[in-house]
Length: 304
Image (cartoon, rainbow, N blue to C red):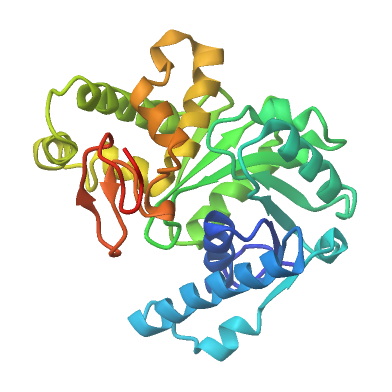
């Protein structure tokens, strides 16, 4: 069963963090009933709060004709994978750990109807590598959403070697129904977006490390000179330095030393400065807006 927009009437999201909540928000706005499954009750309630807040902002901005009560009535949370049983599509959005994702995807597939679709939101891991754990790899693909999901207009559709043509066509239609644009790529390390985005970000970090320019000026060069909406260092803060480090390490292992993470990235992550989510990265986010800082400078209350 599908909605009037062509997406499955019941959609599941595994993981209610920033990305999972954004994905749930997108499918809810498109008319689906959405269930978010998390590891425990506290995480599930936190995920529901994220989705509810995002829906509230959409109502305030007038981007949906529905009221908040109608939207939130279509969203539920659970700690039980069995809650996915009625879903025509489930999108996995757990952390970028291959074994964690494989285990999570197997657990979801076990409760799905044979006709349901399964997708991963991985930003860099091999879709075929994840599909190797599944009984129905032809019904599995990558749907790489971008952060923040509500504002992003791109979804990368990643096709594994055994992804069916039917699923490719369905995925393109879902992306259109969500009001976004699909870029279709074959399964390769980093796909198109992460590979290019990380390459640019790592070079920006090396420039900062070498003292070529400040973080603010490096970013301004790309925003003003190349019309990027956000510079590579501020984008890294928004994505999460730990996330970027994990992707870089994976790309280094698969594509070679050109993706070796610079020391400034490893050191900043080791100090717990992960970007916007921790309040500090290459910029200071403690007051809600980003301000330039020196990564070597101690944060408030931190000893040098």
